[in-house]
Length: 295
Image 1 (tube, helix red, strand yellow):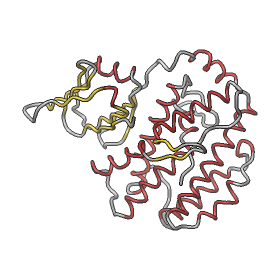
Image 2 (cartoon, rainbow, N blue to C red):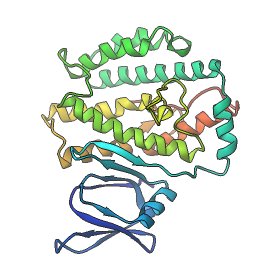
Image 3 (tube, rainbow, N blue to C red):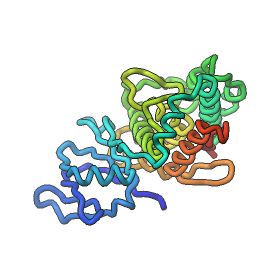
Image 4 (spheres, rainbow, N blue to C red):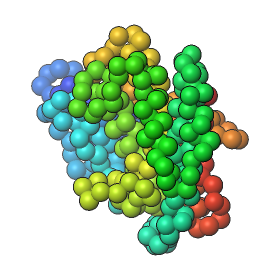
């Protein structure tokens, strides 16, 4: 079942009643709305005067609902992360801690290769020249030793958004849309990792003492082009501001159709398939990640 995503853009009081999220407008603005917790996949809290009860937060965390809190500018700033993953979490965590550099490099090679393949597929889908990236995804070395990912990005983004485009997280317009979409995606990846018994703070490639979710940054890479596709559509429609409607479009990436070798699944389900395959790699029952294919 595809889970619902909601964005809190007005002043509401959020509480738990009978396993349901109850949204009550503050003041005399209207009647309360109830949504079963089991139907929720993502809750984005944007309004700065939202009131949330502790029992509700606990119930959302236990149900694996992705909860994102935004700052005063409406940009995702924090996420709710539950402690409990699954019943093999301790065993999986030990394997995750003890993987060697050889496996890390092999896994990162797969991630980078599929990311660039998806970037090329998106360019072709939009009528651009995806063949420009072919030499890069065909020759990714172990650990991406010669930084094919970075070189490909310098070709990809100008092809996608125009020759003058520069990917800069501090700029407005297209960059702010990418920032928002990637933040939602990152939170969803972190949730999927924990559900698979993995610790998002122990990365494969990404690592920085100020980064609490490096493994999420690793595993989200092949999924980024699905966000890019939505942002490109918005840019073509001259929708360059983070309005309520634009944010809803960006959050809808979690329901995008994602292709895998044998099946098609919503992106939010695909994330769980990818993180589950990572666990299998750590257990050495397979050496291949299950990664999305953009079509």
